[in-house]
Image 1: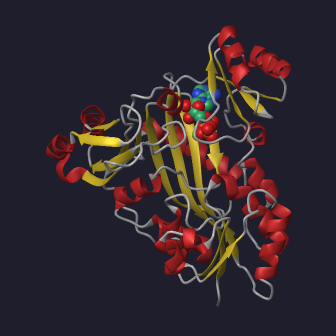
Image 2 (image 1 turned 90 degrees about the horizontal axis):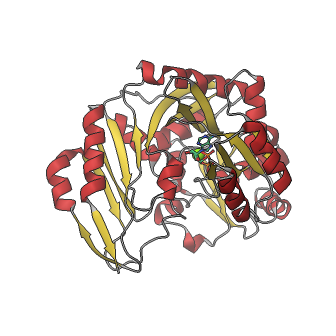
Amino acid sequence: MAHNVLMIMPGFPGEMPYFTRGLDNVGATVWGVAPGGANELPEMARYHLTHYLSVPSLFTNADDAIQQIREWTRGVTIDRVCCLWEPGVELAAAIRAALDVPGQTPERARRFRNKELMKLALGKAGIRVPRHVSARTIKEVQAGAERVGFPCIIKPIAGAGSQDTFRCDTQAELDAALKQLGHIEEVSVEEFIDGEEFTYDTVCAGGVIRYFHVGYYRPRPLVARSVEWISPQTLSYRHVDDPWVADGRAMGEAVLKALDFDTGFTHMEWYRKSDGEVVFGEVAARPPGARTVDLMNFASDIDLFTGWAEAEVHGRFTLEVERKYNCACITKRAQGQGRIQRIEGLDRVGERCGEAIVAVDLVPVGSPRRDWKATLLSDGYLSLRHPDWQETQDMADFVGEHLHLYAG
Ligand SMILES: Nc1ncnc2c1ncn2[C@@H]1O[C@H](COP(=O)(O)OP(=O)(O)O)[C@@H](O)[C@H]1O
Ligand SMILES: [Mg+2]
């Protein structure tokens, strides 16, 4: 049987060529669609695609894009439509609906994207979500803050990467945030949840969770995004049967059930307060970004890019998952502006962490440093793994402290 899979964005962001390869690995014929020309595709994506269509209007005019895709695939039965990148999740659902392809519907996709619809559905299902109000005007934000109380969080209704997210402890901070919110049409005003921040990520097939993963952020993403000198860490937690994460796992299962998720990758964030209470953060119908799928793979020596593809295309998941390691990805931000002049401390990190290091990908000397607010990977990262949780964190801190990039 032919398995024709339409893959939106087969080459970007960085993980996508691996997912494209995964689809090819499990026997799918992959039809890639993106706004750019075929020549812009990374080599790996190009190699594993059978067909490619450049649709410049893909993210600007859905009707036009769907029309082009319809013409292009005329006479072919498309079996799956996937997009593992947040901005295209709803578009993929719209294409499914237009081409009559099974999979997540636009209505379901919306509840994974719109943070108010999401929390309304989950609250209805009895899941603990932060107190929340949606707001479209300054007056509504003000009224919302009064309802949820200080401290509160103001964030875009469908954001990503902590962009345009404000913690307001006082009216003065709220006023300051309002001044910066002008360009956003609709925001969520939420009760601020003080606690530690985790993820619960899955691969599902046929409405069943076939693989799950628990991640941990050090520090919380909003703090990491607000303070430049921090080297943010994303960790993969090995001891998933610990009480520390039990309520979060249970919440994750309940969330997917309440939102009726069927097949594919999911990425949920959740908070654990100091009194142990667990609170929902957000959930997306796609994998986590910023190389976290690599951490999941390093933790168990598996290939989830292919594991996901098997679930997507064949409705099965046959990877053997043994949790052998905790993992950490430490992202670095250069000091100074301009081009990277030198990288210091790699030798010391090598001595300290040795074979625990599984990946190093830093912006090379001579290249311009990146805008640390615009990319979660900042000026590059180092990933490591170790069976012991405390040792994993200690090594990650060592990297944060001793590895430095200097720009000038
Ligand atoms: N209600 C909240 N209480 C505490 N922190 C929050 C709350 N909402 C968001 N945050 C902080 O802001 C970050 C980004 O918010 P999130 O809802 O995850 O949006 P994004 O889609 O940008 O990741 C979170 O990781 C968390 O650190
Ligand atoms: Mg988030």
